[in-house]
Length: 163
Image (tube, rainbow, N blue to C red; front, top):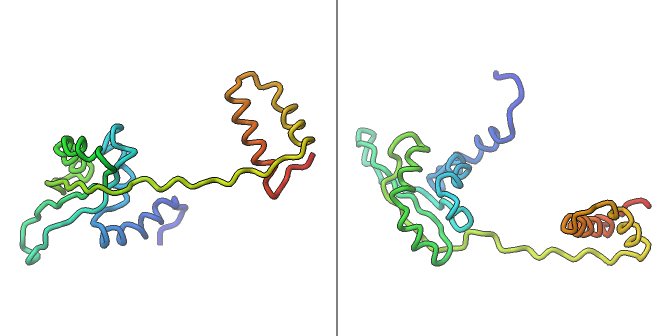
């Protein structure tokens, strides 16, 4: 039995990898390294969707590389299509062998829809005055505004700060 501490990522990968491999043919390594694979131009609009492996007739059949399906938002798919050779190369370098030989791009939503945050409750005048007093020493206007928003949210939450 192995003793010592283990990182939560090791445990999570041990649980997630078999599920992802069975359902989508991908593993957490590809998901975790996707930003490096796809590059800065496509980080915000793409994600690996699945890898489809050709069916093998028997255990003696030679390995045949698979097809990586990438979800891409909107018109960016056209620009991504021009990068497929580089993507194939990067994915194969990541896996350490020629795992894929084709890329299929499907247009679908990648980003989660923006959640509407509830507005903080209104503060009592004394609380606003106290917050303003605390922020007087902050010289940077943008920082002061951000801290003011944070302070309002904290002070209006259920666990109000003691005065």
